[in-house]
Length: 266
Image 1 (cartoon, rainbow, N blue to C red):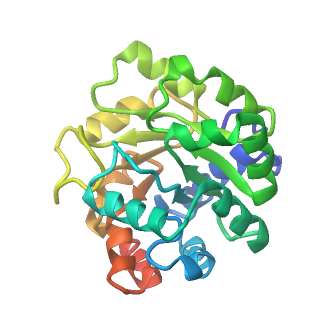
Image 2 (image 1 turned 90 degrees about the vertical axis):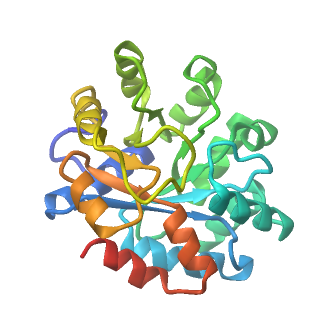
């Protein structure tokens, strides 16, 4: 049972909706699918249309806030981020678009580096995000020790600050990060940046089992996930999979994201 969600009670807080969506996929007999797309890429004018389509197929959708120095991301998402910035996409634009769009079929999580959030102001960010229907945030360059102010602002509005763990996270810190996370725990499958190679390391399953044993929240595996067989394999050891670079590549090639996401469940 997810932290903060009583058995049989409909999830009310945004971070609870993330957890509930992942668990609903699991109860239907499949791993949750968490697709990632860079906001406003490849076509700024079609951002909401694309997001609606992706949200119909995904259980939770991760929307990337473009940033000039996306250090955790590989070349695909770097390219998307730089193009979106050149097109005028910003955090403020994203929140305005989401607010105007109204409810979507899946909870929305914003993946952002810290600077745009600092510039916006944490209290104002939490308020605007709640109004826009955002359920939480992933901030890959924010250390746990420096996350207190943002965490407090998000907690006050029921928004998730999703923690990332890695295969080299020590046991004591893993426990700390899992306890602090809301929505789900993001288990990075590989050491390095997003995109990755074509195969995941054989040690990933034992690692995911270790993370899963450290939390009552769902664990979602990400980085390097791009094929249906990987989703099936990881889904035996995690509640869901984050699919990022592979989906961004489909979008920039002009292919149908719905067909791609449906194929991942095959």
